[in-house]
Structure formats: C-alpha cells, structure tokens
Length: 267
Image 1 (cartoon, rainbow, N blue to C red):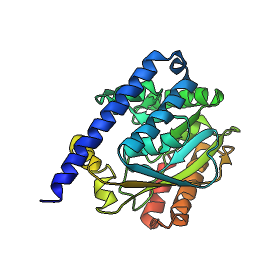
Image 2 (cartoon, one colour):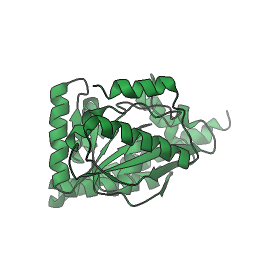
Image 3 (cartoon, rainbow, N blue to C red):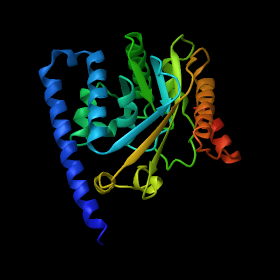
C-alpha cells in the first residue's frame, strides 16, 4: 500500500503535465496559420509528441538509419506508439475511425491531419489509400500499423495489405520499424500495451503512474514499393520481425502465425 501512494500522486502530476502540454499545443495550433497546411500539421504533431514524452517521463531510444520520406510501417502495441513514432519524424497517421470521437485525443488527432478509416469498409479503405497517396505526393510521411490492431508484443501480427495499395508499384519508400517498451518495475504487456479488453481511462491513469517508461525503436532500411500490395505486406512483415530479433526481442513466428500471414494477404 505504501508504494501505491506515490504512484497515485505521480499519475496526477503526469496527468496535469499532459493537460498543460496539450492545452498549450492546441493554443499554438489555433494561433498559427502555418498549422493550416498539412506540412505544418505534421511538424506541430512532432513538436507536441516530444513535449508530451518529456512531460510524462517517456524516454525514446531509437536506432538505425534516418527515417525516409514515404510510408512508415511498424508493429502496434499501445496508444503511446503515436507519441513515440510521432516524436521521431514529422508525419501523418492512419487510425481507426473510433479515435475521432475520443475526448481531447480525437480533436488532437484531427488537428494533426490523421486519416480515419473503417477497416471493415472497403470504400473507406480505398479513400484512405487515395488520401495516403495525396500526402506522399506532397512529400509528407505517413505512419501506418498494418496489423490492424494492437498486441502484447510477443509476436508481430499479420500485416493486412490494404494500406499498401497506396504505394504498390510506385517509387515511394517504405520504411519498416519495430517498437517495444521497457519498464524497470512492471510488465509492459500488461501495463503499457493496450490490447484485449482493456479500458482506456484506468489503463492510461495507471500508465502515468510509472516513474519511467522506455520505448525502443529500431528503424530498418527503406525499400522501394515496387511490388504489389500483397508482396509488400509479406516483405515488410518479415523485416519488422527481423528488426525485433536485431533489437534482442525475438518474436515467435510459428506455423500458425505463418498461415495467418498468408490468409491476411489474400484480402
């Protein structure tokens, strides 16, 4: 019980810092005409993510080559992924449509120029692909999570090929990245990763009580998106799995997982 008290007050302090930083970010967004452009929005998002990371005690340790402009592809573990990856490079994100209705965060996502999509709706997927192409043609990087959902980090879920439709057969770069978390006390799979039937508010409040969260990002070499969407899904999945191994966090890709990848790329 004695350890729970400082954790509770740390949560309150980090929540206050988060609110102040986000409030300041919204003010900067509203007062600057620059943020009406998509480039300005991506730069605003990077600045905001860096400030939030510092305010809540999130350390980001990245390795690998600089991120290339184009499509950035990563595994998905938590809502923190946006802050981590957004702090590394000016970019736009593709997100499930439900995020748009989240209090405060939904407004921030819209301000950052996020593309919202209903993954079960083919028309939405086609519209998102068109939106991604439009951003890439402006020289703006787009971050996607092709797993379609988050996980506990023990494996990299199959990549669905829909998001690769936007770049398939083009000269745009596709950069793979692997993301993982470390806690000095606690289990990242249960306290950082946001998956299964977890509820956002209690999970977020508990996460803010952590003294230090370390995010590890390993960036891979960019490749040209010259293949079709299915081959791109397979290749980037294999590269992200390899990056996990290089980072000392090998994931298990058993026969069932391999079959799941084959099933996913049929869609």
